[in-house]
Length: 235
Image (cartoon, rainbow, N blue to C red; front, side):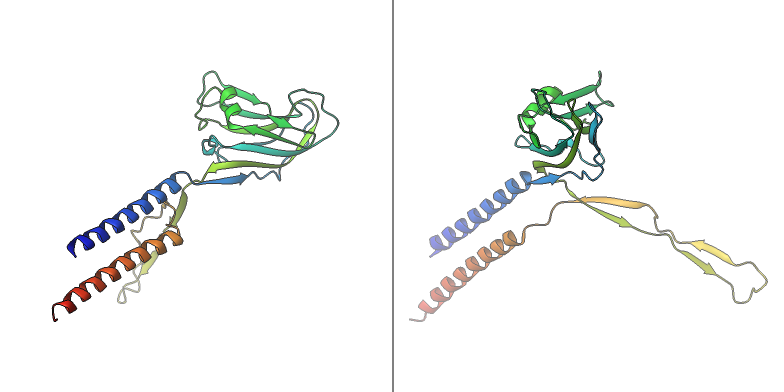
């Protein structure tokens, strides 16, 4: 009986460990497809940029090895450039010396869409760390072009950010027997600053339910076994 209980506990512990490891791997590898906001894109005037994105809009460190950027566009004319009618530009003008202006050609394209790979990005940029990219741009290669849609696949999911704001309050205190004296004003000592904290993503509900179910099953099995053992002593 003791051996059976020990085996049950061992199995339950192993299952819990596997669930925790699976969740950790899932959290580390969590990715999403990111669609750029191209509402401000403009038709270029030849060898110009249709739209650009700074770090405050998108940080290129979110790219992964599986990232592919697919862009849809409209041309005002017919492109004759062999490398494609559109190019991806990664600029680093604050931390790189000399400054980097990397122009990446699409690995496949037609007259309305083009795709860029992460492998080509780091090859042209010269570094596999893209966190220093100040600006990401989509430009034409000689024929006026307007970006209408841009999506980057398999991007790292940024951590959730919770903003908590506390406001200072003012309390007016007036002595009841001192009508002729000026009122005294005191400010609360609450910190008026905005505090930003970064929190991890909540555990998936399915994972929580699975863990609870396993624990409940193990407890029930142990209780049943113990009850049978006690009942057997009376015979």
